Figure (cartoon, one colour):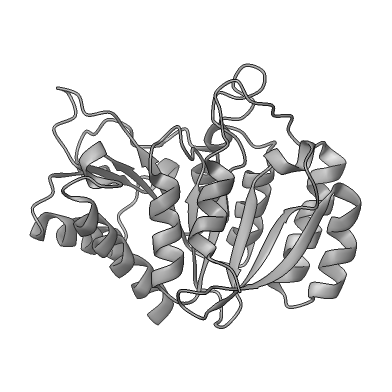
Amino acid sequence: MVDLRSRILSYTAEFQPDGDYTPPSDTQRAKLAEGVGRLLDGDATKAERLLAPIGLKITRLTDTASGRRYDEIAARKPGEAEHWGRLYLNADAALHWSAQVPHPVADQDTELLGVQLLEGNPGGSLVLAGAHRRAGQEDAADVARRGDSAFHTIVTELQKRDVPGVQLHGFAKDSDRPYEAVLSTGAAQRVLTETSALADAMEADGLRVCRGWSDRCPLEGVTNAQGKEAQRRHAKFVHVELAPRARGNGRDADEAEKALSGLVTSWADD
């Protein structure tokens, strides 16, 4: 038994802008893709064999708070693979959605929101980057903009299986961003029934929302690497930018979480 929230947040609490980060090689990403694919397809034994040589392992966890079981892909020990990130899969229900956190700590409290969605809603997965977005050389760890990361590799495997995803970001409130949330579908720039419903739910609770599919919005995520991949694969991808007060202890955080829970629940009910 583990406290899942504490386990994940203790991991991200160590992330620093000047931290270490080296992306996996082409060969390592290929092994990761195959291993994640095997796990998603129900063959944990084969997945473990593929992941072990690149420094990763699969652990079955039972959360003390909810009693739910999860499969975790994480580094076997401290080192290079520790900074590639983690994957959590709900092991008690069929997989219907993913929450993606590409900038934990840097986009403050998006990691907490990702955990809350995973804990509070069945049938989900959490894809978590393993370093601060400014770690490593230049923009190497800014995984939302790059296709050479473990994060992107895992999201792609989910998209191959038509698993819709919501990617969580945070922005600093500014005069040209008079919103609590900016919603879009990334590069596809298309309206989805569920994204309209998400915007409606947020607005019903008093949040100001910019809808990227119909308004001129900042931070629409059109250059997002996972959004571009989703467009190529015709996969559902929702890019969510939240102001500080819609995250963490902000006054609108509960309302934002409730609306996002409604989004992933709609996917689970499909």
